[in-house]
Image 1 (cartoon, one colour):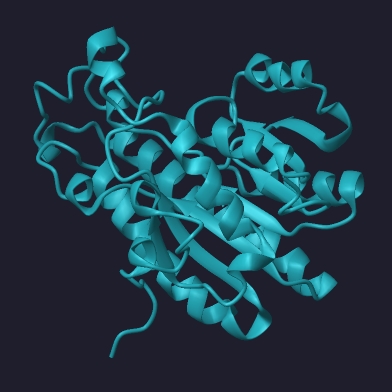
Image 2 (tube, rainbow, N blue to C red):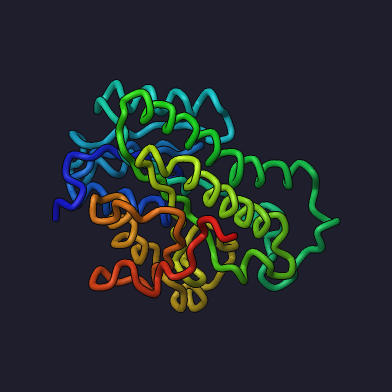
Length: 265
């Protein structure tokens, strides 16, 4: 308990799934947390049932809107006075392309351009808008900080029928490597975190069976490594790729972050 006591975090897409699990993990470890969702405020309101109201700010905000991202940061500072952590979790997946994407993959040329734009806008541009707004305030406050970008397995990025979701995550990982280098001298670290396998989240088709869901990873697997990346224990760890299924607090810089995404010349 208390690994990030008093720190201030923003977690996007926190209404359910991975975002919610990470936000709950941060609150349990003593952080003040701003949770955002694009559409469903009821998902955010349910956080208050756990008695976290004093340490919580729920906001409706669409990360595809740069002005909305700026407002989230402004409201965070107004409420809590600072920003230490950003988790870019908000995302849109393949169910927007094809409800049966797991069993009947679509060809890339069958993707409607408006759907392509929506997924890229959310998964690539959204993290840029949020990170840009957060880093600007961190620099103004001369604060160190941690940016955590949520990704997927390399196999998913290249899986047949997973366009544009796969390419969007590949782009986010490339951006993360660049941002880590840009921010290293400022003490603001940027890392990738992924579950390490198929996970029971809202990314699944709505008709996914209970048997199928039972065999998946649960979002809570992300809690411990996300807390580590937000804490001072990870100071100096940047430009790295942590896989939750391989992560252990006993060896936090072991196999789970062997695949660095920083400079390689």
